[in-house]
Image 1: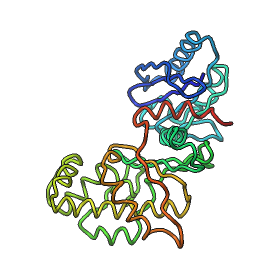
Image 2: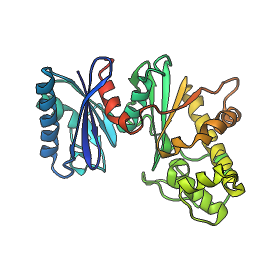
Image 3: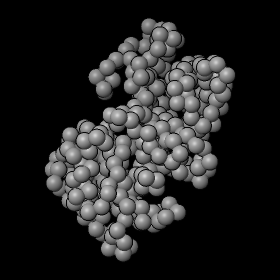
Length: 303
């Protein structure tokens, strides 16, 4: 059995999958955010419950909202202070008496999509999350590329280009990103960024849902805004494709539900690609919010 843990700031979810990745059991409990030993014990209790229920020693994978340093086995996460800078990987392995794999939750999202039935024929997959922030993960032949420092896939923190700044002009003020730097693409391409750009050009404050509804109704201001946003997204994606050259791009997060992205983006990306490069397949995520635990379970599919 494959056990996938999705550790969030409010809950820990365990999802159990069989060898064919069929979900067969799930349980959620509150996250002990301040007590590290209680956090470890929560993982232990859930694992032992699943072991007993299915009469096996399941393979454990964990997705965390932060950066995983595989050299030290530590994690950096602000959502769960108890785990910050703690050696979560060796501690869990010792407590559970089995190997434990831990990855960033965006990497788990990307891995879950790479193992979707529709997508398994793609050798390389880029997962891109357009939500409250902008995150990502890169999968090669069914495995996560996490990098030396565990920051591969933190693509939202690429700095906006000169061309991007010129595209937006001086109407959209720079704000400090959660990482402490300014002009990260995340501050423009996330859901809040989508709203900020609209407000800067229209003078009106509206939610992303309202803006999209106006776009669908044919509103000129919303149409201009969406075209401006998609051009910036195409610029961003073109840079990533030039570096990673994925076969498939899978979009997740709240903005991924906007159908206009899939209609407009394939026509915009080519002008930002290198040489004779072609646009990869661009698809909406198949698993959405359930992808975290599923992706964590997928961590043990290939060694």
